[in-house]
Image (cartoon, rainbow, N blue to C red; front, side, top):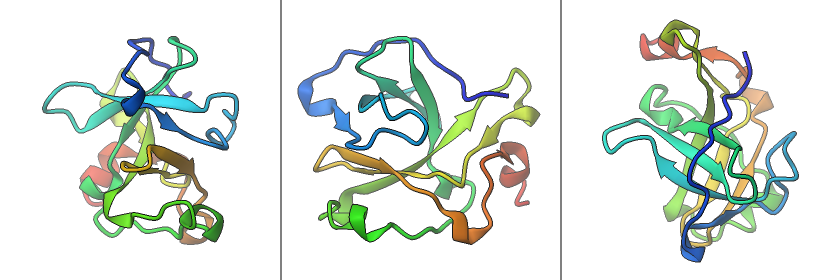
Length: 142
């Protein structure tokens, strides 16, 4: 199962653009994104590329299904995230036609400073997380 690519609206006001100075892991060519809600009441969003309207990732807040989720923000990124009050954490979702096959990547969280409009993807290797955790198992408390 691959990360789902979502085609959609890739235009937004300049103030909405989030810049990833190093790109995303394995996707370094994509550096500018906007976040679009899947729907008003959804727990999922689209991290939509500004550079390529045919590329976007589904993301979600990991704390909704794993309140004790934690990772260390490397110093090189922490120094650029001056306002941790407005820092948001997301993980990517691999969408499948059957909900039981949907997975989330807890190994590579995405950290975004809402004020600075800057983001980074980091590796949470020291916590035992995997790139593919079954979403239904996490929602069930497992």
